[in-house]
Image 1: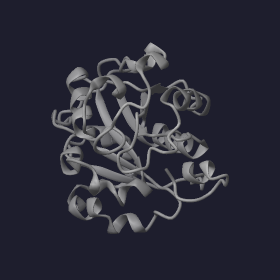
Image 2: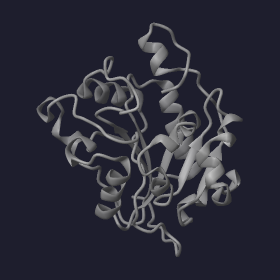
Image 3: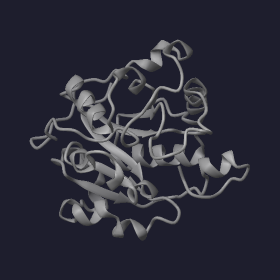
Image 4: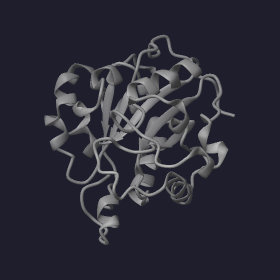
Length: 238
């Protein structure tokens, strides 16, 4: 069991984003999904937990690499790999069943510290910010970090309550192909430029009061869920 950690300036209980923005609608009935995935993962007081969400349609080694980098560079005790019912900013026409995406995520996410979950399916929340508020309320003594790929940063300002999200938990942005430089021009980066934390301090990001965010460089995978669905292997990340 990890040693409990404390921080005098831990994040206040507001609202952040849990995976994808905005509104979701269930793509399957709960009976199609093993009940253990519909419960929020268990965590202990003082843990540092990364929240990494997406449609994972399908999940791939690029996602696993982001999780691996986050675990290592942020000093996480756990990473919650949150498979969402659907992303309102993307077409649902090619969305695989939730149970299938969970099973594939379990196959890709091999590290035991990664907890694949689909608890958002049962929360009944319409917005990521509301989901994260529920996460915070149920786990007041856990230190959460929101994790996102750099490619997602460009559209982050389109998420409902995106500024509220940034003011809830610290955010770690993981480098992705084609996004290393462009992230600086994103609305989120410009709006919260004052809150950027040096990459060398990533392991203490959990101590920072939100808004606080860092950009983490590292190995990058060009794999893309969109390209995989289209029968290729590279393209825009998802």
